[in-house]
Length: 234
Image (cartoon, rainbow, N blue to C red; front, side):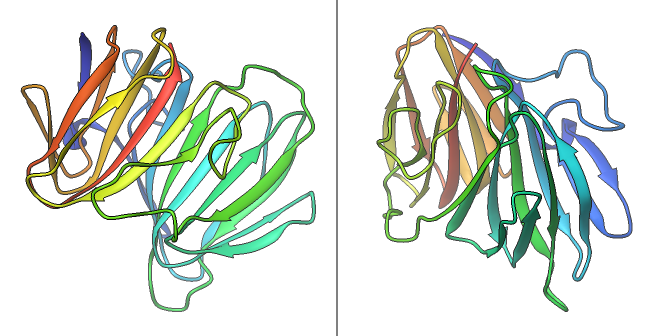
């Protein structure tokens, strides 16, 4: 087993009047040659968007983008005429392909929007752009890791990559094992809230750990925790 530990206080940080963003990997004005991604996982941004502000319309190309709202509301609009508002319990999956313009904003008048914005490198370039969002509330069960994105149709969302996204909320003292779908892949465990232990390493809120060269990983919730596990090709 090989590991990479990314502590929350070592992340990149961008602060504007309307946006407070932490970057697990190089992004925008934050550049660290040692943090250019984890395999096909290129971006994991932890964003807080102020009320009635947001990302103006901008382009993306050849990137798979997953957005997970944690608090508040997020309004999406794009050049494919999609317009949605998603909240915690939804996920948004977009394939930028040959190119798509989109905006993401917080429509609420007084509550911040908190989101995770995740970019995955696709296995196929220049495809038709596509957008979907999914209600995952009924899938999420206490003390279970639920697969939200998979390449084989076994989950609500799918990407143009051999990638799996799983998420769950666990009570203190709960543990589970994650079995990799492909031995050539690695997993990136991100602690949204709480405290978890992987082998002998303790991760706290917003800490993350990349694990590879392993078939199965044991994860224990030390305090009530909310965990995101992303499996990607390396």
